[in-house]
Length: 186
Ligand SMILES: O=C([C@H](O)CO)[C@H](O)[C@H](O)COP(=O)(O)O
Image 1 (cartoon, rainbow, N blue to C red):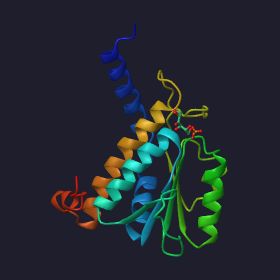
Image 2: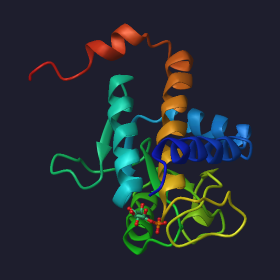
Image 3: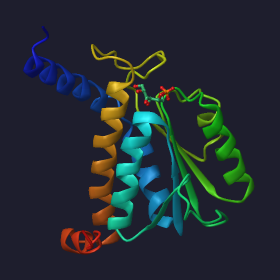
């Protein structure tokens, strides 16, 4: 049977290799796109979607108006808004469709992907490449001992958490004010 503690260490080492390949300029560009957006709309699928939903929650804690594309209360998107799409393989049909609709409505666009040559990524105004192994297998990324898209999905979660910390500094938002925005009905 696999040693779970060893596997944990291997996953952390893989994440370290992804860290070494991230582009600071792309991260700064992404942070600025979020900071200037009036409202932020997010979309992602599967486990990538779960990491992206966690980011959506933190954007709300930062005081940004943030909406998940498929929620019943999500309003119309338009000029001044930002669509953030996460698409590991960069080849997810319905994400590409939503991306085109948001762009046609005048929204700014950002794509976080494992493949910058993917059809949605190539159209994005802001691109953030996370060079980690994804579900269907992209070229030129950090390989992983883990199954499917684990490494990309873990990378997304940690990268978004660090982006939130940078955004909090950029926007002058304290940890206390983030906590104060958290749901207070249990
Ligand atoms: O949820 C997922 C699956 O469990 C693979 O780990 C993926 O995040 C989802 O299927 C999207 O995968 P990509 O095609 O690599 O974007």
